[in-house]
Each structure stands twice: as structure tokens, then as C-alpha cells.
Length: 91
Image (cartoon, rainbow, N blue to C red; front, top):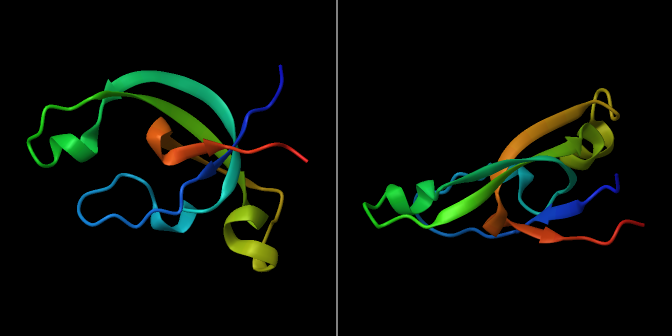
């Protein structure tokens, strides 16, 4: 199974968002797809929510915290909606 590398978009929209600030602009690997759910960013404003794919993305600590990461090879998994992700070519 090939890995799907993605980058969290470096957006800073106003209002209610469900993507952690510290992960924006970071690159990870899709660990698994979780299915489609109502977009919570729209629900927060009582809008009719679109269905969005939710995926679990795995990041290394060195990617998240840089060279100061206590254990660089440890990982962090975050569930992020697809509209926050963009594909990245693995190097």
C-alpha cells in the first residue's frame, strides 16, 4: 500500500475551524479514511452542512515541533477534514 502524503493548508480563516493551528502548513501521511461527516465549520453557524471526508493524518514529532522535538520519530495522529488537505509528492 502506497503512502499518501498531504499538507495541511496554511489557512487562517476567521471564525470556528476544526483544524489545529499548530498543524497548519505541516506535512503528514494519511493513516486511514474515516468516512464522510457533516462539515462542523458550517454547522457552527447554523448553515446547511456539506458532507466532507474525514481522514486521520499521521505526523512525526520532528515535522510538528522541529529539531527541538524530544523524540523526533514519535508520531501524532489528527483527524482532519479533506478540504484542509492538499496532496504532496513524496521525496
